[in-house]
Length: 327
Image (cartoon, rainbow, N blue to C red; front, side, top):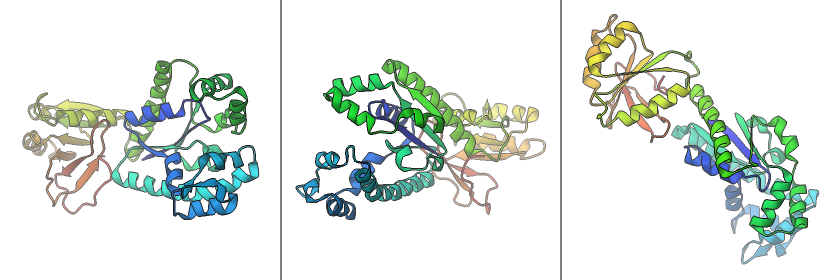
């Protein structure tokens, strides 16, 4: 799993990039949502906030965010006190969700954290993405989209760490100074790089350039789309992909020795016969897709790009320890 921190100052376009990453298949953990959950009525965090800032930051048993904002805006000590109350609870919940995502097999987790550099160590993430825009443009967005005055916009902008200090510590910077289409293009470029890193991390014990053979009966094979999704993932990982059918698999195995073969359920019998007949026999690992894998064989869970999680069973896998990924 690639654990990514994504941040950006107000009106930079960070939320738009988060939604794009989510649409393209990333798991998103939103720090603002976690903070709201932590500050829910009846919780220890809300009680601590009221104890520090006074009961007037409460409204109808919940948090009056406008009243609290007025007390911490421009007051570094008050803001630090608020962060000390809220962020440990948010961090604990974030780590729990990251663990769940890893166990689920999610490949890329985007941690949407507006104050990443202000309250966290960026080194805890595998990659940090910063969304940025020129200050005059951000000021204009705050005026037109949120109805703020120039003074209010400048006060909010000045309260945040300047992006110039964040850029050197970021692995990727997405500049949002043009159209939405331009932003999407830049975000797509960064996401493609994150996908390559995530895919490569999944096969870190294998050498790039090794071959993965995918075997389907034909283009009408019901599971062919799953193989296409697997091909996308392992191409990103630097693997070579060879498409075959049961009829051509034997010829393929005469010319190359692949790292693994993945066959659809419909192609499994023919693939097994070609695999047995190869010289030497059974020259590599053979997996097949099945809705009901053999309970004796090793079962592997795989999350290919653009597809739901799938299960594979391995021929000759009885007694072997399960692996976390295909290769």
